[in-house]
Length: 357
Image 1 (cartoon, one colour):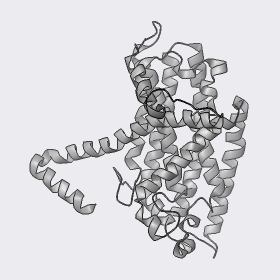
Image 2 (cartoon, one colour; image 1 turned 90 degrees about the vertical axis):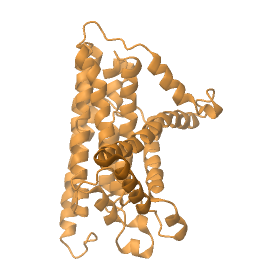
Image 3 (cartoon, one colour; image 1 turned 60 degrees about the vertical axis):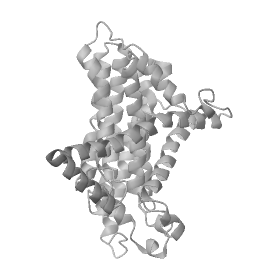
Image 4 (cartoon, rainbow, N blue to C red; image 1 turned 90 degrees about the horizontal axis):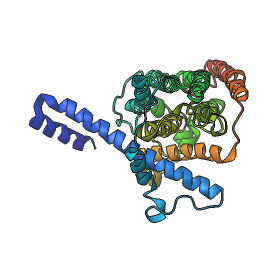
């Protein structure tokens, strides 16, 4: 792999000269973004298929073999629809809101490592960058709610701002615990740290991952991620039975499609981050010849797929929470749990039984 990259770099520099670094960075961005958009499209199909299976029905099965062309048909339908801007809305902010929502969802992937040396930007403050970028998403929802000039959209925007801020605190404290045990903000270092330990020495790598000693934090992080993406059972922001489609109620065509893309891109991002911080990233669960033969990025993909499928399982299994229940869970349960576990881990690290040396 290193030899191939070196050959590409030397050839590119010979052909393009000083323009090569810009072109190469654009190529790397496309290599991340295009497969991601493909995954987002087919995640919608997987969601409908999985929920269909849980309801004992087929799901989409008409467009293409086994319904495999359904996401493409949906994309074309949304692209060809007219974008209607409400007459009393703030048209500039109305059109800016979908961009504000999808921009952080795609930008955050710049620091996600797919392997030991496979990241767009392997920066030391990767965890901090991720937290900062993803916290911008709420602005897109608030702007959409306000600019639409609709009482339903505005109500959804107020709900979204309160809910996302509440659960961002729990996610922030979870990341602090991961930072403490890893001793680094670099996402690659966080994964590498999980590949060492007593159990990893025995070949049972999955017992050295952070999910076991930080199990309460893992649960809090993932459930907070579900709330952060406004998915069931925390979807009061776009509660169909109460406020139609929430902040997206006045959007049509491509504007609606971009909100939709952002939601599913965030689901994949939360799942990938859970895999990187708690499930060993690109490491196989057992250190064996067969498992080591499979490339690391495929292991990361498998773990991300399992985590993202849990989002869908939640949707098919749980009823929607009341708004006050969502707030109580965030403020009175999750934040105290993360603070207590923060202290427990801090004390644990000062004892002779410290497993993160």
